[in-house]
Amino acid sequence: MAKRAVGEAAALLVEDGMTVGLGTGTTARWFIEAVGARVADGLHVTAVATSLASATLAERHHIPLLELEGRGVDLAVDGADVVDPDLRLIKGRGAALVRERIVASAAARFVVIADESKLRPGLAGVVPVELLGFGVHRTMALLGRTGAPFTLRLDANGLPVRTDNGNLIAEGDFGAIADPEGLAAEIDAIPGVVGHGLFLGMAALAIVADGAGAVTRMEPGRVLPPYPDPRPHDEEVT
Ligand code: 5RP
Image (cartoon, rainbow, N blue to C red; front, side, top):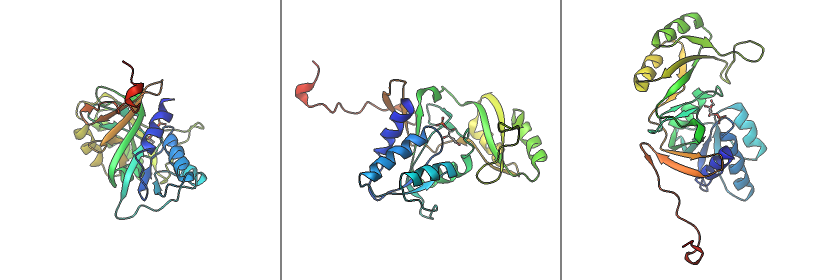
């Protein structure tokens, strides 16, 4: 209910003629479905998908897909694993973090959608990192010096997960992250790292819903007032 509510709310931000970045995951899926419903009703958009899975879903809904062009996208909408009050995010449980970052950073507006279980008072938990297979042992050793032991993410058969880019995913559980910007800079500086799941200073708006589907909007550092009551005055509860 919550994931669907935020996906549908975000789809209302899409305007005719926009190029839209389509995120990845079980929340972004609802956004893609809702955009698809609007396309079926006559909305004209083009889209850039952040994963093969999201591209397949978009195609199923007849959403025209493009390669990411130099001018970027008008709006990108994606899920997250952790959201803090400044809209700093941890992403990457779906292993699409590198394409997600490329598209989010190319967006005039990046909107994160999440159920309220993703909200935390500060960033904490597992940080995924995408890395090249070449030099993996050395890259893992350097990652291990950033403050958490890292292990490779394995699939159900015990084999290393490969991303859509053919790379590996390593994960380190940091617990509470006191200095996310410092940690991001440290990880970025490691040769062999392709990207990490710390999305800092990127999201302009969060759309969050509770289990009953009640939607709240947040900008960095503040919760926005609810949407105006759409009922005519004579229907207002007194
Ligand atoms: C994929 C992601 C996802 O957006 C994130 O993991 C949230 O997924 P879900 O909406 O399924 O909870 O970053 O790389």
